[in-house]
Structures are given as C-alpha cells and as structure tokens.
Image 1 (cartoon, rainbow, N blue to C red):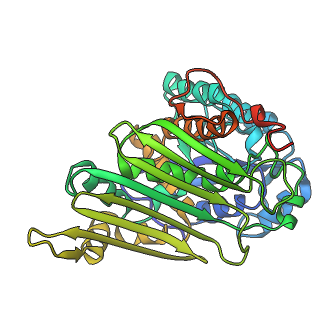
Image 2 (image 1 turned 90 degrees about the horizontal axis):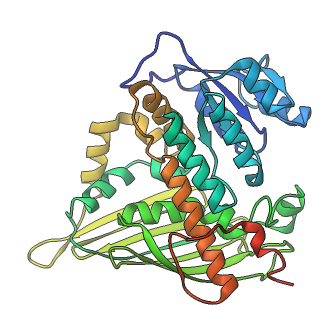
Length: 379
C-alpha cells in the first residue's frame, strides 16, 4: 500500500522516469511504489534485459514503457522528475539535458566527475529554479537531521573533530561485472564511489565547509584502475578536522560504515554494520557526567516525522523521493540539494588532487580538476 505523502499534495501525480536500470534503480522503484503522488512513466536503459529485470523486481510496474534513448524518453514523456542511476561518468550529460528540458532531478552520487561540470549543474539548477536532490542517502536517516540542527545551534558547544570509515568490501567479481567499474573516467575508486556520501554527511553534521585537504590513496587488493583504499584529512573553515577512510579492500561479507562527531559538550556516533544500523548520542552534564540521548531523539523524530521517517532507515530513497516531492510542491530546497552535490565533488576531487600532487590542497578548488586527471597514477 502506498504511503500518504505528508505536508504536500497535488491534484495529479508527478511523473517520473528512471534512467539506468542497474542495482540501485531497484531501490528507486521500491520507493516510488510506496509513495502516493508519484507515478513511474518509463524506464531507460540501453540493455532491454536490464529494464525487464528491474520492472519485474517490484509488483505493479510490469507494463511500464521502456526506452533505450534518454533524450527520446525525456522529449516524449516530459516528466516532472528524472532519476539518474547510470554510471557516474554519464551523470553530467543526462542531468544537463534533463534540466534544460524542464525536469527536476534525483541524481545519484557523485553529481559529476569534474569540478567544472558539477559547478555548471549547480548553477543550472539555480538559474532554472528546478529542484535537484542528490542521492546522499545518509542525510535522510532518522535522527541525523535533528542532531545536525542541535550541533548547528550550539547545543553541544564547539565542534572539535569528526571521523568516518567506510569499509565496503568488494571482490574482483564486482569490478569485473561491468567494464566501467573502478575506472577513473566513469567511476573512480573507493573514495569517489563508496565514500562520497559519507564525506557529505560528516561535513554536513560538522556544520562547516572544507578549506583544505590532505590525502593518500593506494591499490592494495583489487584489480582496478583507481584506488581501493584512500585516507584523507580535511580542515574545515571553523577550524575542526575531519578524518576519512574509504576502502573496498575488506571482506565483502562485512560492509561497515561509521560516523562520529565530537563536540565540546557531546558526541555522536552512528553507522551500519552488515546492514544493521546503530546510533549513540551523548552529552556532558554540568556535573561532568555523561547522559545518553538516544531516547530523547527517537521521541523527537516520532513527533516530527512519525513512523514514516524510521522506514527511511530501511530504504533512504523513500525519504529522498518524499522530500523531493515536497520540495517541488512547496518550492523549497531538498535536504541534499544541488549545492551539496557540487561541494562533495569539489571536496572529493580535492582529495584526489592532494594525493596526486603529494601536498595539501586548498578548497574549493580554484581550477577545474577531473577524475581522468588521475589516469596513470598507479602506473
């Protein structure tokens, strides 16, 4: 049964097309199936078998129209929302065409593979007034937004530092399943593909933009063009430091991601361990003792978002689609907006540039940098 989309309504559903019928597209399809106010009009893929598999994975979509050309699909359907789930190297051209033809976007991470292209897409969203929601899934998990609000309002005092590790193991079979995986042109390595939305979350929680990046990357186990291990330190404008580890050179059966933010009077730790989420929020009381605030935040989340917000923990794309719907109807910015897409690409490519040049790099980057500028780094 579809959920009632809260806080916004339209007389007719907003039309959606999905471009790219790979693994992540199924999460999009499941989210659309549970939300009133959205109607899938078509899917696009150059491989008809991929489209058939996708439409058969969720009940109710078997008769959906299939295209093999995204431009034809956009021109004929004229959808309200275009969801882009193709390899990263194709994001720019599809996003640009869709927005130039009046479509709002749900764009999987990363926004693009170059700083200049990300800036162009961001500026195009500003110029057109169209909404762009990034697939930065961690922003849509329950409680996260409330903690971020309290950190921003100074409830926990000065932010000192933050850490993330994303140990998202993939074997060579994952990379060999598609020629574009692990390439500098179309995918990037563990940092660009597996870690960029974690970097986005950490910076967002800490409430300040990065101003400097220092990094190293390595190839340890995986037979790919890009890195399977990367580590970096970011200095934020407010003086806080952020430590980053991203790798696919770990056990594929044990995917883990952990985020921590440390403040003068409190700390947050949250993450996923083999699909199981956990969170712990602590504050320091005036007498020096610590108090766990999990229950407090859960009650607040239930009050503000209801049970729906906790369903987003199982499929964050449910939250992304609902938020994008509300943003279009109410003319407000999505939680993970176009600027977050540009900023995360600029930060990630700054990390790559630092690794390539063996020195700290100032952010935002003053000149364009492209993932293909890393070609030959490991040769």
